[in-house]
Image (cartoon, rainbow, N blue to C red):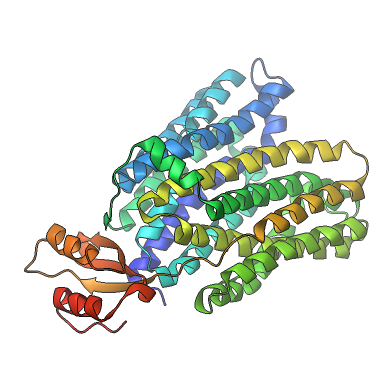
Length: 454
């Protein structure tokens, strides 16, 4: 079970993630219409204003994450959120479409998704990591549904410029939420190398690349589905666009009842690879149902439900698996590459979804998405079961210097990382139990001042 510190930090960091996503998503369902009111607006420039955020996110995730592996993560999160708030303010004050594009590009420059996830990994024990990442994934899904429901309503109240001001306020509130997260100092066996070598090391790891491909494909399918499915909900299910949020919300809630047991199986019984492949199979099954049943309201909803259940299981498993597979000294870098893959997937998903609408063959469109998912499944069979570390929680020794104490711990074979929260006088010690022998246990007992059962 999560301790109080983990619950507080997970709530705060999930809220930061959700507030940023709300600011992004609320614009999407309204800007194609509301954007026409800006000077010099054309359909191409309106599309650029929506999409440029994701492009700058994809470009800057890796630089932010490379720096986050060398320095404190919290100041980088603050910088990213300030850029997000500034971009919203510039867009809110703009009268031309070019001003909005500049504002959205600056907001996207706050590319700290990977840094937030790495910080969450720092402040949660290995055994609670999947649960924490699941809560973050659920907050993202919920923010998506709320945004698509609230965006048109808020625009009617405060106008499109007011909606951009709301995103600025969300960015500032997110900075305040960071106060709930403890100050963290990380200690590990630091293999000093240049930024380029660090990035090359991450990009050479086969399983990491399969996870990057997975998040790319997952968000490609999600974005394409959200473009492709709404016209079918209107035509075949008789649901107006304004009611679609009330379709997605129950499906999201329903998916939670399947996602959390899957996460427990994956973590507690070390079945992560099996659950992962099963979730891809669930996505494929949902898409196949929609190939043959899109003309029926209830079969269409069943297909969407299967898709959502599998999506939310994947959304929880991917960050957790990534944090296990990534080199400890390059955790944020690996998450940065993964986040860039996610945003690129969403970008290409939007392009593909638009092209599918031009097909005038609904079954063919769902078949194309199914084929993409099948290729993803075949490429994922090469994934190996992730390495499982364990975390121990200890009070910091009062009589010893922290740096010296952590250096002595890291000299013990089997100790992978020590995360110190000095204000709380607590340390998380990450251990590979398979590497710990009797000599290591004796050294640990001496350093920690009490018998250690591993």
